[in-house]
Amino acid sequence: MKLPKYVTKILKILLAIFIIINSIAFFHAYKFTHFSNSKAKKTKSPEELSSLDKAKIVFFGVNNPKPKNKKFPSQKHQTVKLKSNKEIECWLIKIEKSKGTVILFHGYGGEKSQLIEKSDEFIKLGFSTMLVDFMGSGNSEGNQTTIGYKESEQVKTAFDYINQTGEKNILLFGTSMGAVAIMKSINDYRIKPKGIILECPFGSMYQTVLARFRRVNAPTFVIPRILLFWGGVQNGFWGFAHNPTTYAKSITCPTLLLYGEKDKSVSRKEIDEIYTNLKGPKKLTIYKNTGHENYLIKNKIEWIQNINEFLKKTIN
Image (cartoon, rainbow, N blue to C red; front, side):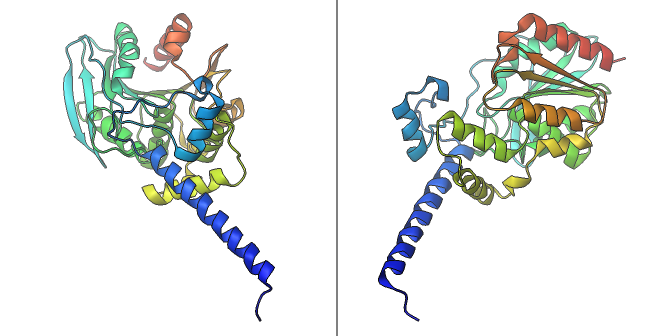
């Protein structure tokens, strides 16, 4: 039976809208998970953007140049190349009479030189450190990021490398995406660190996509789901199953969970759900007047105190 002309016209319009929405989502998903080699400046945080700039992001995506190492540790260090699912570069800083080794992992859009100041504090507390560039960042291979999903294998690779040196006290530190990668690595590969320190991990990949849409005042109806679908297709995983809240149920080692109460990227509800699901000894610390930012800079005295107390309790 032939459809009326107005029905056919409506169906064509709906099809066109469907194609446009999926095309935009496909484009955004690629730019979000692949760094460029261009010299264009990285897009500012949503709080620093004008309404016009936010509108441009909705249609044209963000400028996302590959993060580069901007400085080097002041201490004598060894550059280590490890073969994981991608080749990753690390800086290993060994100290005398070390109490253990802390492996540090950066967040989305970051790289290992951003971890130097935190590494310095761990060194002052008597620990050797290893700073890791995830794939796509710094001097590691490629330009891809999967927001902690495939990076979890790189956490295991770094852990195994230190473990094979005979080190008994291995601790993992991660901020944002780095924290998520640690949680997934423990869940998937059953690595057994002495303890972990997690800064502002998101509760699920879907929730973090929603948060990014809200920060640029973009509509959150349907499109974030489409974007997450295409992001998974492009990168070879099911984004809707990337849920740190679930990974937390596999974590039995001592955990220090840190969060800024004014974080617009990760909600307090997500943090509380993760904390509830952690199975081992745990502590949650909330920093007032702090967003999704560097806690060491914003809350230096308190941060060092929190870290020191956790390490003393964890390393006997």
